Amino acid sequence: MLQMILSVWRPLIEILVIWVLIYSVIRFFQGTRAMQVLLGLLILVILFLIAKFFELNSIIWVMSKLFAVGVVAFLIIFQPEMRRALARIGTTMSNSFLPLGGLMDEILRAVDHLSRNRVGAIIAIEREMGLKTYIESGMMIDAKFSAELIWSIFDPHTPTHDGAVILSGDRIASCGSLFPLTQSTDLPPSMGTRHRAAIGITEENDAICIVISEETGNISIAVSGNLTRALDIADLRKTLEGLLHPAEGKSLLQEFIEKNKRLFQFQRKPTP
Image (cartoon, rainbow, N blue to C red; front, top):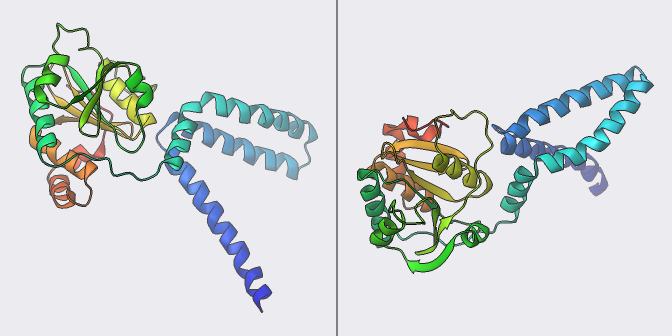
């Protein structure tokens, strides 16, 4: 009896697991350049099956060699995407989040001052995935976060104003850090380096990036490789509370989403 049950359920479980894996891969690569390659590979697989059905041996031989080289080429070309996927799989849940009290207020005060004075800035907030590599690329300071210190760091007359500040827990881990620029080709040429760096770091990491435009003073936020632009301080607070404290900020975030559904589409558009 047990063998009969297993013989029925085992194929169903295998099909379900395979379906979940394929669906997860498609969802992960959706919207990236790797998705186009996956669609191309799917077409090649279909052509390969057709060639096998009609016993077209020459085509089968060529495509077999192509697949052997293609797997290695895929891993090399899309190494950043693969690294990001493995990092997310290996990430364990942590309790490193921002307090909703004083530190959040300091961040908003710093951003508001920079925005009003049109001082360009980029602030990355570390979450579950560490930013150690990027912290080491800048000037490690390990200082308590304060709005005044942020203003000093991003002062246009200081050597650190072009880099990024990384916030780890409740402390400034580094300033002047360098982030990879996004390789996305669907961004307009008018988008500046800071915004491209914010998108680039969040494509590889689960960090949150706040960007202040030097030209307009507009506030943007990047999450998961997508940019939301033209936020005011109240909207920024609700967004951060929803991202960093899903349980506590759920009602506030839901209210904000209902009023500003456009902002939560995370469109890749430049700050006007």
